[in-house]
Length: 389
Image 1 (cartoon, rainbow, N blue to C red):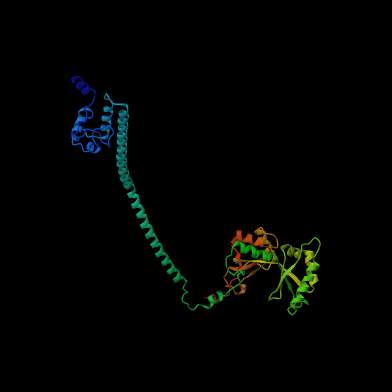
Image 2 (image 1 turned 90 degrees about the horizontal axis):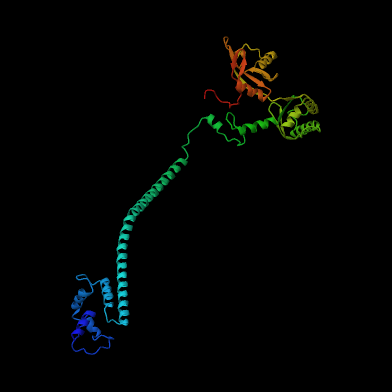
């Protein structure tokens, strides 16, 4: 008996305490002599915990899943434990270990989540504040733009209001008359396109001057007869080597002259050639001459001693300024010399030049005469108005 007791004491834990009155196993357990309710409500649970602390767990430490799984593995090494019981104890130990891992994971997730949540809130809070501030600024800007738009609308309405009418002088009324948009007003500065177009039109014009007693081109002749006579004269100049000649328009001037507009500059040059010109004038009959276009320049402060009636004076002036001979057709005083003051030395004169190139040359480089540099300018037509206004 003593050997059995010693062997049992060294081979494993002592038997589970028996409860009086329970000699047969219950239907709720397989090999235990206690019912399941008795095991759960064992009044000796503190004794059992004390027993585990003495042999299988660390004394004083709480019964954590880690310590319980450790105790189960220690019980598994005891002698006399069957294979079935070993498997059950091992499975229970692994389940307890998984429970430990799950509990640790849940605690880690909870801790990390709380820290991440606080970090995200701390990081987003300034940005949210900036977004709200930007939204407020945009709202203020929108209101300012609306106010500015209303102010501009009010100012535009005030600007579009017609000014209060007031009496204007007669001169302004004459200058404010409606004109043709294609007409170039006098005394205005134009673009190069206007100047080129106006010059091109002039180069296609031909001015003929019949005498007052001309049998066909006098003031009493009907317009249809004048047109037929001019067309017949143009047909007479038509030759094989000549350009195409076509009459575009005809204008009767106040001084009985007739302004013809042809289809091209070549046609005008062809008519002005010597032989063609004689044929054209002979076809018209009577006394008719073709007037060359003159370009007038105003010469300021020309000495009165200049003999402008003498052709030699004009030729000498051409030689001194290096311009072609017969470029200056005539020079006349703007004011009658007899009405000048007795001690007056210079006066203004009007010079007529035969070519546009010569006129532009004198405008650019001035006119030299008698060791004086004279600065001519273009003769511009101006509106007739009172000099006292």
